[in-house]
Image (cartoon, rainbow, N blue to C red; front, top):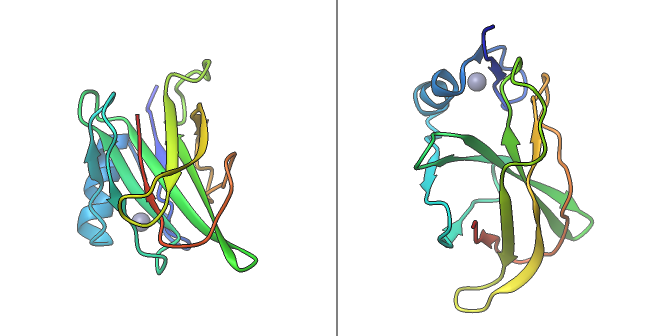
Length: 140
Ligand SMILES: [Zn+2]
Protein backbone atom coordinates (compact mmCIF):
# COMPACT_ATOMS: atom_id res chain seq x y z
CA UNK A 1 0.00 0.00 0.00
CA UNK A 2 1.31 3.40 -0.91
CA UNK A 3 2.10 5.66 1.98
CA UNK A 4 0.97 9.10 0.97
CA UNK A 5 0.88 12.49 2.65
CA UNK A 6 -0.72 15.70 1.49
CA UNK A 7 1.10 19.00 1.33
CA UNK A 8 0.17 21.33 4.22
CA UNK A 9 0.26 24.40 2.00
CA UNK A 10 -3.29 25.55 1.37
CA UNK A 11 -4.36 25.09 -2.20
CA UNK A 12 -1.53 22.70 -3.04
CA UNK A 13 -2.62 19.37 -4.47
CA UNK A 14 0.63 17.47 -3.91
CA UNK A 15 0.32 13.96 -2.49
CA UNK A 16 3.27 11.66 -2.03
CA UNK A 17 5.36 9.62 0.35
CA UNK A 18 6.93 11.34 3.37
CA UNK A 19 10.29 11.43 1.53
CA UNK A 20 8.64 12.93 -1.54
CA UNK A 21 6.84 15.45 0.64
CA UNK A 22 10.17 16.60 2.10
CA UNK A 23 11.57 17.13 -1.38
CA UNK A 24 8.40 18.85 -2.46
CA UNK A 25 8.48 21.28 0.46
CA UNK A 26 12.08 22.19 -0.26
CA UNK A 27 11.77 22.39 -4.03
CA UNK A 28 8.29 23.71 -4.63
CA UNK A 29 7.82 25.90 -1.60
CA UNK A 30 11.43 26.67 -0.64
CA UNK A 31 10.55 25.44 2.83
CA UNK A 32 13.06 22.68 3.62
CA UNK A 33 12.37 20.73 6.79
CA UNK A 34 14.53 21.39 9.81
CA UNK A 35 16.32 18.26 10.97
CA UNK A 36 15.93 17.46 14.65
CA UNK A 37 17.57 14.79 16.76
CA UNK A 38 15.40 12.72 19.01
CA UNK A 39 16.20 12.96 22.67
CA UNK A 40 17.87 16.33 22.40
CA UNK A 41 16.21 19.66 22.73
CA UNK A 42 16.40 21.91 19.72
CA UNK A 43 16.12 25.64 19.79
CA UNK A 44 14.18 26.63 16.76
CA UNK A 45 12.97 30.01 15.69
CA UNK A 46 9.99 30.20 13.42
CA UNK A 47 8.53 33.08 11.51
CA UNK A 48 4.90 33.82 12.17
CA UNK A 49 4.50 34.72 8.53
CA UNK A 50 4.09 31.05 7.70
CA UNK A 51 1.35 28.94 9.29
CA UNK A 52 3.42 25.77 9.33
CA UNK A 53 7.02 24.64 9.53
CA UNK A 54 8.30 21.17 8.73
CA UNK A 55 10.63 19.13 10.92
CA UNK A 56 12.23 15.81 10.09
CA UNK A 57 13.64 13.29 12.52
CA UNK A 58 17.29 12.59 11.90
CA UNK A 59 17.02 8.89 12.71
CA UNK A 60 14.04 7.72 10.74
CA UNK A 61 13.09 10.66 8.53
CA UNK A 62 9.68 10.92 10.15
CA UNK A 63 8.02 14.16 9.20
CA UNK A 64 6.47 16.55 11.71
CA UNK A 65 4.71 19.83 11.27
CA UNK A 66 4.73 22.73 13.67
CA UNK A 67 1.58 24.76 13.16
CA UNK A 68 1.34 28.37 14.18
CA UNK A 69 -1.94 30.15 14.27
CA UNK A 70 -3.45 33.25 15.79
CA UNK A 71 -5.30 32.76 19.05
CA UNK A 72 -6.61 36.18 19.84
CA UNK A 73 -3.60 38.35 20.49
CA UNK A 74 -1.48 35.29 21.14
CA UNK A 75 -0.18 32.47 18.98
CA UNK A 76 -1.24 28.85 19.14
CA UNK A 77 1.56 26.36 18.62
CA UNK A 78 1.01 22.72 17.88
CA UNK A 79 3.08 19.81 16.67
CA UNK A 80 1.83 16.85 14.71
CA UNK A 81 3.50 13.79 13.30
CA UNK A 82 2.65 13.46 9.63
CA UNK A 83 1.32 9.96 9.40
CA UNK A 84 1.26 8.64 5.86
CA UNK A 85 -2.10 7.61 4.57
CA UNK A 86 -2.11 3.84 4.72
CA UNK A 87 0.05 3.57 7.81
CA UNK A 88 -1.97 1.98 10.56
CA UNK A 89 -2.94 4.32 13.33
CA UNK A 90 -1.04 3.25 16.36
CA UNK A 91 -0.52 4.66 19.79
CA UNK A 92 1.61 7.78 19.65
CA UNK A 93 5.21 6.88 18.95
CA UNK A 94 6.65 10.26 19.73
CA UNK A 95 6.71 12.48 22.70
CA UNK A 96 7.55 16.11 22.77
CA UNK A 97 8.10 18.95 25.09
CA UNK A 98 7.28 22.33 23.68
CA UNK A 99 8.52 25.47 25.24
CA UNK A 100 8.27 28.97 23.97
CA UNK A 101 9.94 32.11 25.03
CA UNK A 102 12.55 34.68 24.29
CA UNK A 103 16.07 33.30 23.96
CA UNK A 104 17.36 31.98 27.26
CA UNK A 105 13.99 31.76 28.92
CA UNK A 106 12.06 28.56 28.44
CA UNK A 107 8.48 28.28 29.43
CA UNK A 108 7.18 24.76 29.14
CA UNK A 109 3.90 24.84 27.36
CA UNK A 110 3.12 21.22 26.95
CA UNK A 111 4.71 17.88 27.41
CA UNK A 112 2.71 15.22 25.73
CA UNK A 113 2.55 12.45 23.22
CA UNK A 114 2.60 13.74 19.67
CA UNK A 115 -0.64 13.29 17.80
CA UNK A 116 -0.53 11.93 14.34
CA UNK A 117 -2.39 13.36 11.42
CA UNK A 118 -2.87 12.21 7.90
CA UNK A 119 -3.15 15.83 6.84
CA UNK A 120 -6.18 14.98 4.86
CA UNK A 121 -6.18 18.00 2.61
CA UNK A 122 -5.79 20.50 5.35
CA UNK A 123 -3.43 21.05 8.21
CA UNK A 124 -5.19 20.30 11.44
CA UNK A 125 -4.05 22.05 14.51
CA UNK A 126 -4.18 19.67 17.42
CA UNK A 127 -3.44 19.66 21.08
CA UNK A 128 -1.26 22.13 22.84
CA UNK A 129 -2.14 25.74 22.49
CA UNK A 130 -0.74 28.87 23.75
CA UNK A 131 1.08 32.02 24.11
CA UNK A 132 2.34 35.05 22.44
CA UNK A 133 5.83 36.17 21.82
CA UNK A 134 8.34 34.79 19.42
CA UNK A 135 7.93 31.05 19.20
CA UNK A 136 10.90 28.85 19.60
CA UNK A 137 10.47 25.30 20.64
CA UNK A 138 12.19 22.35 22.11
CA UNK A 139 11.55 18.91 20.74
CA UNK A 140 12.53 15.82 22.61
ZN1 LIG B 1 2.86 21.82 -1.77
